[in-house]
Amino acid sequence: MATQTLNFGYETDQAVDSAELFTLGSDTIAYTADSVSEFTNRDGRYGAVFTDVAANDYLLIYYISGTAVGSEYYSLTLITNEFRPWSEQNVNVEALQLSVAEILTKLGSGTVQTVSPVTAFGVIGNIVIGDDYLAANDRAFEWIIDPVTGLAFGDCTCQFGGKSTSTDSWNVTGTVSEVTISSETKWKLSFDLVSADTSALVATLYNWSVEIRGPSTNNITKVTGQVRLVPSYTQ
Image (cartoon, rainbow, N blue to C red; front, side, top):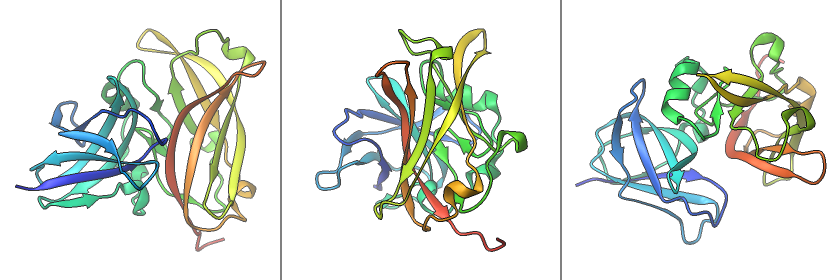
């Protein structure tokens, strides 16, 4: 019997209590986790434990009380081991070329969803230091979220920031717009990340978050994760 523990990052001390695996391109749940918990001595790191998952590439979606709060991709083998996500192994998520429809179907209503070409299912592929990620080139970072109760999208701003353990960081302001998806009203958070935002940063793993800011003191974090910044060899 193989016990496979899928390691992923999320805010510490959160009640992440379930997780499911999907084979790539499928909407059918392939496996359900036996348990999900935060590691005792690794704050902000969680383990989803599965038994006898067949060797393959999978999408993991994890939940708090039935609401999806994040996701990662993994390549698993049928052995007892701890597995780390693609986002921490220099895997090009963009190459999957997943459609918006697939993303919305898998994550469902009431969850944070990503639709920009440089992100998928809440996972950001490697960010190339000094690259321009612009809406004009279909490379902006975009998230689709449910409207925030008590706020109007026209009164809100949004922030996308990341920070490494060496204190290197970026923080950019984006736009909030209203969109209709499958007859439901959603908010789209869109961010350009220009060359100057990352050109001086070191290549390492960064924690990142996306936040909605209301007109007064309403600061609401909507999604968090980790991403690796990698050097460019052409700049």
